[in-house]
Image (cartoon, rainbow, N blue to C red; front, side):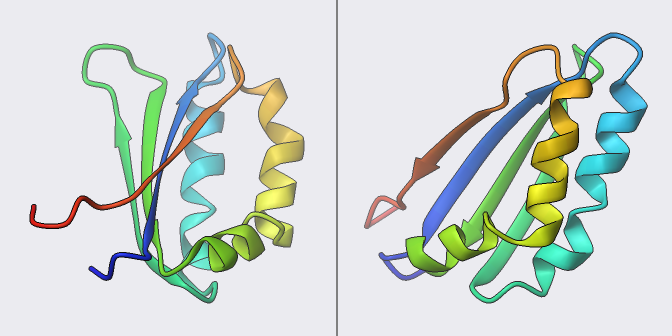
Amino acid sequence: MAQDTVHVVAKFVAKPGQESALKTAITALIAPTQKDPGYIAYDLYESTQRPGEFVLVEEWQTRELLAAHLDTPHLNGFKAAAPDMLAQPMSVQLFAEMPGF
């Protein structure tokens, strides 16, 4: 990918009893996110050792398009509902691809 793409790694840990609700809420973001300008990839993983722990890996064309995505109605709705489902605040980190790898 181009060097200006940005990768997002987000971690979510469900409160006990909220695992299914959190999984449903995260997967509901896939279809609208795929329509957002700058979207490249959106991969969701669930821990095989700790059910209810999810990692989301996204790729965006630019930081500006990622910022626009973060202010969409579907993301704002998720951010408003997430605290009721999360055992801890979600962790979000941004990464850039290392050239040559």
